[in-house]
Image (cartoon, rainbow, N blue to C red; front, side, top):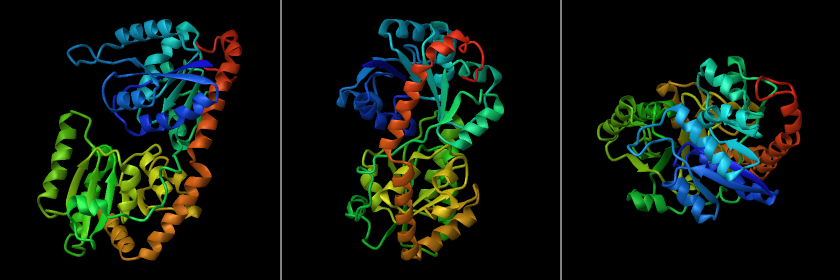
Length: 389
């Protein structure tokens, strides 16, 4: 068994953590012994313990809750790696990839960094990421963005996330969400799932819902997710959403918070809307596709890679256009035949491209490729400069 350490930034179970968790069983079956360095408390830690996965306490903050300086974190990481002796490190986020880059280079440790964000990086961050043997981007859009900014193209590979097609699958609605929210059976449910913040564009859905408020009184809107950022702009963003819920949409906009029943919840929705302003490769879109849910999504980032035009698996529209989104919602809610066709096409797309078993096999091949080429990497001093091996 090859010792593999996965380095995680957050204690949450958002897309990056869910994608990692979905592969661990298959990675272990392929001959790796995974251990996860992550915050010792929170949903991620709880899930790791429930599944018997080795959890190594790792936090970015001091005893007062303040984020430690990068120098201190790198010293801690170097000690962590020395104590546990992994043969391969997988930094599960861009930030952890940047943090770990110089550390693994110094220790000559085979490593992979995962790019799950499309954000502008400084030159120093790019240099840090280029210290890894290999970099995985969740979509071609993500890869192209960062390569254009200076990442070594020879190191950056596209690794699509996968979804459990047995857990997320088309099923008849049971009505449990209607009962939970005490809604009439005829109510139509439009859901939006994701972290509450500006990037996910839930305010665009709220404005579209206001446009439709008088025209479609039987439609209820569900916001599933939490706000994690404590920045003032993030708090203000959430407060503005709640003001809409007690104003024009009083009684028809419901905040459900974080849920562990998304696989079932998706089948209760009439329509899933994903109005993100940027999206490297939305996990909720993969899950919605697997569940066979009709979807409307913004054509940003890697979304078109999930739903190319010839697949007809979702309705795409441009970002920040609540009026157009309202028209798309009204059209689909009025056409159950079209919704059913979208759901079927989306499921086919999930089966052919985003099966978690395929994603796990691809990930294992990346692991093995890094381990197989490490001698060449060391010989050519690849930890110190971009390479083409």
